[in-house]
Image (cartoon, rainbow, N blue to C red; front, side, top):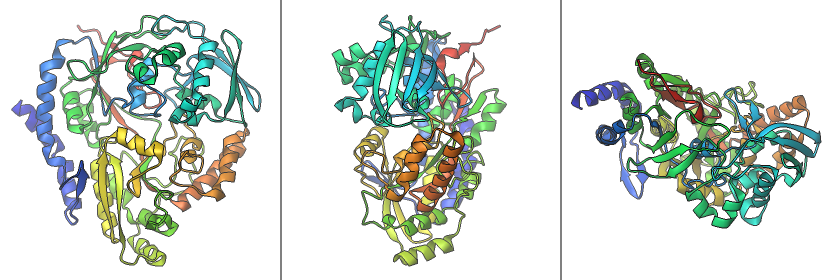
Length: 544
């Protein structure tokens, strides 16, 4: 144990020392649960010991169970409509299917739908898979799909995040047991992409049991079924769905919610996990030298701090010049090169390269503290001001260090920002209600699962239910981008919108970010589809 701990301390000493150097000039304070403390990183070694003791005592006994360590389980358990993307998708995509999905290259492909076509600008026809069954043995067909859409269009369904995403659907009709017609209110060029987020719950059980009970015992068409959300090892346990159309090689899976990076690192490097999410960039070489397969998400998002302009209209952030000043104040190149070891480049728009609508002519805000101070003076804040930000820690590798550097750079222009860390369940509640307690909050421009710029643009706009940023002058272009069926014309509209969002600065743009994953030599078949590993494709290697 002592030897292993000393090895880990040695491996992590360089980034810790580096951070001490870059933050030594400015005291960094954090508030969490009402407590105030300086840097949280000094208890890492203790957490490593705790993780080692926990995993060493419990995980080594069942070597044919696939074990995956992630940042957190979905707060809503098996309810796939209360959130989109990570962390929920890491579990939901194992137990559910949508009609469509993104493949490893970020392309839209069939899942429960095998083919589709646009019959006219407002009508799409989907041919459904005929060999899909739910984990309770019931057949999935067009009537089941129609019932799911009907619930999402109900009063209860419309207020969910997924229901809001498909509010452009007018009606869904059945023309045959496996033929579905979807009618939209206006032309929607990315409807097939939108449908990838609509997980097909078993509607009869959903309605009979109610949302909360269903979430505890979900019924899906995916490769796995939830056996328990917390077993004796502290993990969610999944078992193979005997009726799945995509049966897994490995029958049992344990998903460990390890919000602390040190615990994930310890469990992964000691091979107590087969898969681990959200490792640090400086650890890539460490894992590669030990024979691990290291992958970085191909579908990247833009991380930063969104400004709650609508909820804090009297705050300095209501002035565009102030938002631009905050963007000029941040040394994103140092964050990229020093804190993330060059793995995550600086960002200045709401999309990363490879996303439809990314505008290569829009560059990140340069680091210019002088210009930042001049803009603050022009806006009437020559002495700066105080503000706060609400963030979820552990979502991104190195996020603690990133936010600390942001605090330091803002302090240099007279802006004192207090960080309030919260859990994802509290964050999502504030996001849905639009009642943010801080002027800024962590929110990525997340183009997945569409791999299209329009999705993050819509929730950074008046289109979001209870918006935090709403610019009426941008709505014509946003509506045109959402309905233009000509790909070239639509792409140009998105280019123009990227320029407008850059200028309006509704976010403190930081980095193009993709999660770093590792898989051990014990398994093969690991890949990432829309930031999620399809666990049914993974198998144990044969031992000699």
